[in-house]
Length: 275
Image (tube, rainbow, N blue to C red; front, side, top):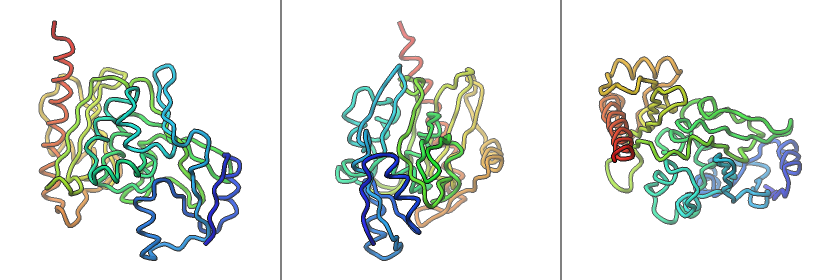
């Protein structure tokens, strides 16, 4: 295995195009253990550290761009970062080691159903910037996640940046995470944001194989399991089960997470409007 450290997008595209089985490394919190165990055996390890702006968080006209190497700690320390993402980054499982090393782009690419960030990226309307031999293309976060541990990335493509709209900088959001212990992966996560058309976007994660969006009127105060089931089926997702919880338990917990996220959003709006 050889290591490539491209310094430009053109060099990155060339590296990806020349490799038969490349592996792209950012923070490496998931990739390095796989390499150590021999789970994967790439012919080229493509390191993104030298890409221009890879570790930068940039805000322009309210919109935010996260480079591929932006870590959870970068989000936490930057006051211009989107409030929802900063909030979630502060509670990432794994302690300071993971927050310092793990990247937002890496979490998206790994697409673990239980990860917190994919759900937040879908709720935020993030646009994923993807590089590859054919050049750079864009993909909405809602389409990027294809299922458990699968995305719309081709084997010779890399996620190089994430663009978040100005609406993501709103302080009005709701979030809920349910997990068994401080050190465990979540069993269900839920994010609530107000969409541009005045509706509420509730996004469910961890309990399903890919983030699922449920759009409801702002006056809604209760949700039903049937409504959630319909959204899961309509968006091509499935309920998720692992060693932490089975499907039945996750279905029951999902409605609790969504209801709490909705209540959290409504509480923030009330506090903001209170004279």
